[in-house]
Length: 214
Image (cartoon, rainbow, N blue to C red; front, side, top):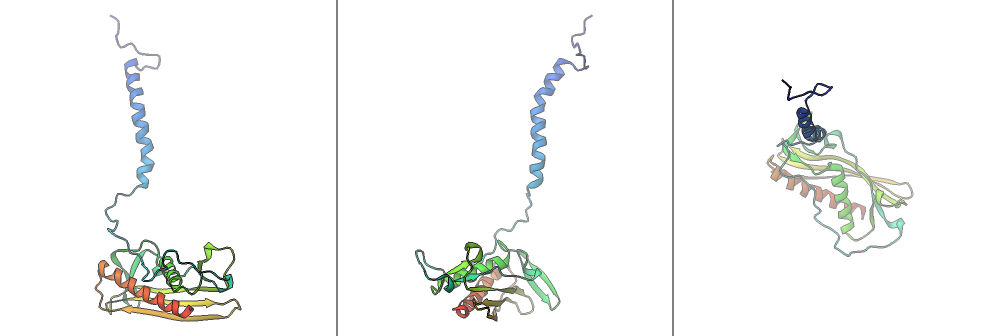
């Protein structure tokens, strides 16, 4: 009697070959999807909102300031200590220990946020042209830089603290430095309270810097 499932030379029945051919696109799609799935995070730990610094004063739309480049001011990148080189909000628990506020994250690192806040606050004063050094080819004669020492929560005093060491370098090579600080007391360690308090303190420091720069 003739075998109705006659096998090919490779030993696989034609019917089975057709089934394998139909399955190949599905298998290929699944294999291609594996690297993509490894790049995606479906973690529920993403915060509901991210903290930002919003300028209390901004230059109005259409405002224009002209002048010589020698009168302009460049705001350089601001350096930070390791505890601020992250997108989290540090909490000082003791003189030698820090933690980070739960569920509180900045939209980007504090140094970049604070530098833009200072630049916009000075620009809003309308007294001089203000540039980010990355925006221009020729360097202005006056450069503002510095180090953001603190922008976080102090558990011992239940307050937020923003502390900045400003460095102002003039065209003739003279350098002036000054420390600026602002504290907002009576703050509970909750994201919805700490965030606005930090924004208030950062704006206070930015205005102090603007008054100093002139």
